[in-house]
Image (cartoon, rainbow, N blue to C red; front, side, top):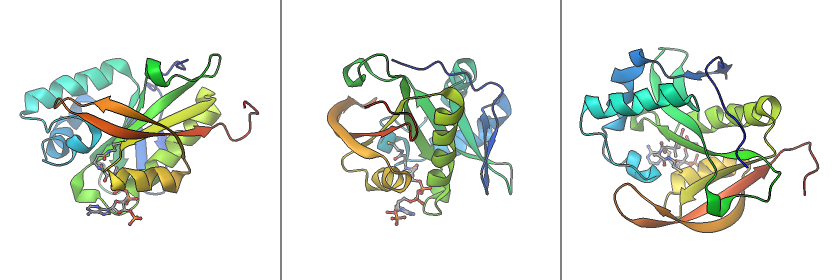
Length: 187
Ligand SMILES: CC(C)(COP(=O)(O)OP(=O)(O)OC[C@H]1O[C@@H](n2cnc3c(N)ncnc32)[C@H](O)[C@@H]1OP(=O)(O)O)[C@@H](O)C(=O)NCCC(=O)NCCS
């Protein structure tokens, strides 16, 4: 089952980052990284072709309130996102366990400094401690070594292999990984 998510009043902090809801003022920062070739494709979507396209997605983030902006404390720049996506039907764990699937993207300019593991670790804590999730899923295309490393650093374990239909009409073999609530006995 999907747990209910509403991050509209949520603000999380880490040493270097703030995680907060997206706002319309983030459009330039969002478009700046979403238009770059080789970023979105690793998560299954095409680089944005125009600022209008980014504005449409940003409006969706604002309406749905399930995707955090990852903001650098040092500059207040939005450099990525962490989303709490609905768990797909075919990967759903037996009811009544509740959870979400985490997805993330970081601006290419900031790769390799451990920003995303830092952000996702904090979001995982929020999901278990505040939302009350029983489990979290996180998937990466088998060829996406960078995302695999993020999953490993956070402590996700292999769960199952699935095929993911991308926005650019391919099916990518995907490793779906899982983390259970560290304190609840649910297995
Ligand atoms: C996956 C992603 C979020 C990782 O974020 P990050 O903050 O750079 O994570 P890390 O700093 O921990 O680096 C992870 C791995 O990326 C690789 N990496 C680091 N810098 C890199 C660079 N400049 N170029 C390519 N790969 C790099 C390394 O293998 C690193 O692992 P290591 O720490 O064991 O050496 C980021 O690469 C990204 O946004 N990729 C595109 C979108 C995506 O793949 N999303 C996930 C979909 S499931």
